[in-house]
Structures are given as C-alpha cells and as structure tokens.
Length: 619
Ligand SMILES: Nc1ncnc2c1ncn2[C@@H]1O[C@H](COP(=O)(O)OP(=O)(O)OP(=O)(O)O)[C@@H](O)[C@H]1O
Ligand SMILES: [Mg+2]
Figure 1 (spheres, helix red, strand yellow):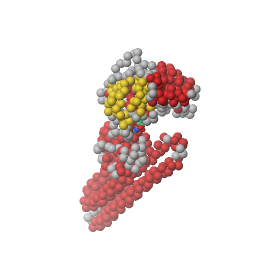
Figure 2 (figure 1 turned 90 degrees about the horizontal axis):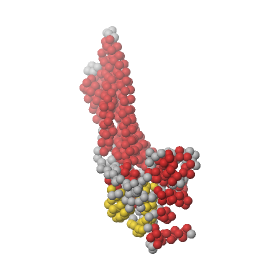
Figure 3 (figure 1 turned 90 degrees about the vertical axis):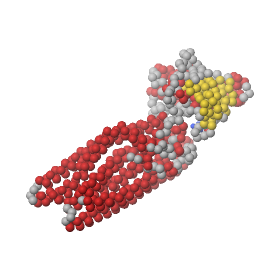
Figure 4 (figure 1 turned 60 degrees about the vertical axis):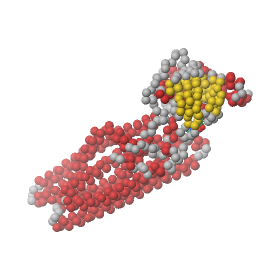
C-alpha cells in the first residue's frame, strides 16, 4: 500500500500554523521532513510480525466473499432450471438450491465472525505497538527536539493520528478488500454468465474508476487540511491549559477565545468541505451505477424477449450489479479514512524518523573507578563552542578545568550562558565544537547510566512526578530504602514539612492536600539529588524559591554533602557563593573573572562590585 502519496498538498497549508520559531522552521509543521519511503517502511515494520495472521484474515475474507457472491448465481439457477423442473413435478433442484443458499449464508456469517475477531486482534496489536513506539521515541528524542516540536503536536500524533489509523484498520481496510474482491468475483461471474452483459457491466467500471480517482485527489487535499486544522486546535488547547496561570494573571482569556474560535471554525469548515466532496462523490457514483443498471435491464429485457438470454441470467446480472454498486458508496468512506490515515501515518513516520541530536554512544565507555576518599570527578570544557539551533552562538570557544572535588560558583548577568554551561555538562545538548570531559572521558562516549549516575542537575523548576513524596525522592536512587530517603530529606531540612503533610512521606503530590509550594518542591528535588549521590552535582538556581533560613539550611547541608564532590553552583543570590572554593563570573558566554571568593571580593572586578552592592542591600 502506498501511504506516502496522500499528503504532499498539505505541506504548504500547515505552514500557516503559528509556532515558536517562525514560519520557516520545519518543526512548525505537522509533517516533519520525512525520508522517502519512511511511511511505507513504517507500515511494513508494523505488519511484519503479524504476516501469518494477516494471511489468515485475508483467506477468511476470500472465502466469505465466495460464499456471499454465490447468491445471485443460485437465484439464476433457481429461475432457469429449478423452477422449470418444479413445473415438471421435480422438487429436487429447488430444494437443493434452497439448501445451498442457506449453507452459503451460514458459511458467510461464520466466516465473517471469525474475520472480525481475528482482524480486530491484529489491529489492536498494530495500534498498541505504534502508540508505544511514538511514546518511546518521543521520550528518547533530545531536548532541542522538544523545544521545537510542541507537546500539543506530540499529543495529536498519539491520539488523533493513531485514531485515524484505527478507523482505517477497523473498517476501511475490510471495506476495500471486500470491494476489490467483489469486483473481481462479480466481473468474472458476469462475463461467465453472459459475455455481452458482462462486457457492458465491466465497461461501466471505467467511469466509476475515473470518478474514484478524481474524488481521491480532491479528498486528499481536503483531508490534509482537516487534519492540520484539528492538530492546530489541539496545540492551542494544550498550550493554553499548560500556561493557565499566566493566562489568568494577564487576563489572556478573551484573546485566547478569539484565537481558538478562529482555529475551531477553520476545523469545522474543513469538515464541511470534506462532507461536500463526499456528497458529490456519492451522487456521481450513483448516477453512473444506475445508468449502467438501466442500460443492462433494457438491453437484457430486449434479449430475453428475443429468446437469446435466459431470464435467470438477467436477474442474476442485475442482482450482482446492485451488490457491486452498493459498496461503492462505502468505498468513498473508505477513501476518506484512507486519506486521513495516510496523512496521519506520514506525520507519525516523520516523527519516528527523527534521530536524537544527543545520540547514545555506539561503543560506550565506563568511567575510571573512584578513589574512595574523593567522590568527585574532574570536569574539563575543552574548546567548547555551542549555540542553540534557533539562535546565535551562546558559548564562543569555552575552556575550563574544574579539578575533582571543587565547588565552583558561577555568577553573571541574565542570559550570560550559565544554564547553558550546566546543560552541556549534563549532556542535555552536545557542543557544536570541542569536548566536555568527565575524568578524561568525552561525555559523548559515556554510557548513559554512567552519565546519569555521574552528573545530576537540580534546577529551578524542581519538577515533581505524580506519585508520593517518597517516590519522588527515590527517583534519585530507585533501590533506596525508606531510611535512606528520610535521611536525605533530613539532611537538607525537608523532613519537617514532609512529616506535616497529610500522609507524610506517602502523600500523593498530585492529590488534594499533597500540593506543595515551590520552595518545598525544591527541597524535595534536593533530597532526590542527594540520594542520587552523583560525582558531579549541578545546582542551577536550585535554591531560588527558598526563604533565607531555608536556603541557609540547604547550604549547611550542602557544605557537608558537597565535600569532596565536584559541584557547579549557579546563583544570583551571592549568599550561596560563600560555600564555593572558586567563583567564575560569566558574561556573554565567556569567563571574565576566575578566583576564590576572597580574591574576587578583594579585587576591583565585576564580582567585587556585585558583592559590594549585595552587602549594601543587606545593611
Ligand atoms: N533552549 C534555548 N533555545 C534557544 N536559545 C536559548 C535556549 N536557552 C537559552 N537560550 C539563549 O542562550 C543564552 C544563554 O542562556 P542561559 O539560559 O544559558 O543564560 P543564564 O546565564 O542561565 O541566564 P539566567 O541567569 O537568566 O538563568 C540566552 O541568550 C538565551 O536566550
Ligand atoms: Mg539560567
């Protein structure tokens, strides 16, 4: 099946959708640049494991159609042979026809039942596999992908697009195979019954075929527009609800309503267009079909009157044609679901064809064993250059060595590149040039579990997963015991507030009563990082939501926790800097000052200015 053909016209259309990075970013479109053949390859790989079952279902359908299509033939036999025999008092043939008809009906019912059961199972497995693949793949893709391809798009891939495939598999495919089979069976039967009538009937397929082709082309366009429109509706919905707090704070409701109304109306309009195309098709195909039937009845009647055609044969021919033309309406439906499924499959294939920009190493290396007296590791930025895909260079050639066990504070103005430095060290991104080394091993070569164990980052956002507080802390080390979890919480001063929650450590953070404040979230995130016990700990504004006593408590804990570990502490509040062995001042992606806190405070540089201003503000 060539699922790749359907969506080309939609590519210009989807560029209309607003997105974060301007109209020329391919990630703004639902259809990502897809390598040729990717869609067909995806379909093949989905069906490959069920070859045998697909073959059996096809066989079932083949037999079922044979049983169904025997009907008119039996009618012809009844009229032309059994009824005359009955007139001669021979009841045998009529009984035989009746029994055969019943048997065929029974067989077709049973076969259809088996077919539905079996094909439903195949379809379920295909969709299960596909949705799983989308989730796994999206999760494995690097951050820069997620920054560009919104979560709304991902949701619409794994909901509407998978659903449209389900529609095709559940109804459409059976319909198509049935139609094709009936065409083959019926054409053969008609030609065999009577060459002349058969030829006329087969000739009527030509305009029908042209009609189907025309419809297919027009429907392809309309359906791509429609699926793009529904995706835009979902994207808007998700983005608005994700940002519901700023929406409220800035009274964006009315503006959002207006935007949504436009998208919603556009979607409904495309729905209307699709229905209109469908209506035109149905009218056209009925016209062709009924004209053909009328022609055959007229000509057939003329021949029956002239004695060159048996009445039963004419009856069978008309019955066959009716049977054939009936599914043609449904063929339109099938083409619809085929169009949307093909469009959906192409979008999914485009998503699955994305490769992580931060790939796992093909030959992963291990870190050298840690000397037991120092749990830290040396970090080296060696000629690193980096820029985000959607912007200019953030780090222009960056060199830095942090000896194992050093606590380095990084300060600098907003946008200087501090978080970027941290994200490179955690390998959320790879440098465009140069290397980041952990104990001499390039992060790109490091086995993923090694990296996750080696470097842990705590950020301002302190995300909590659904589940209990204890589970959230244990993410740092899934095999941790309850004691270890509590110890970690105690160490950073989170134990008191956790104990006061309705169910203590077993409070569900997403349930009522489990809602915790931003500062408390940060404490939980800290406990999680502590438990993970990494060689390199990165704290990016990790105490920004804490009050002064809370921050002090964390700092006290940190000075013991960080002991011997390599740590990067990024902070705007200079109080945090006091626990550092070394301070780096960053501006525009470069280190402009580097020294111990005491040296820098005593000097005349930027840090001294900052520090003085901070002192004054405290006084
Ligand atoms: N995901 C991103 N995509 C594109 N550009 C980004 C991204 N993140 C940061 N930038 C840009 O990179 C530059 C450095 O950002 P970075 O977050 O490293 O600054 P920072 O020093 O941490 O600032 P702050 O003190 O405000 O946290 C900024 O100009 C920012 O606009
Ligand atoms: Mg930052």
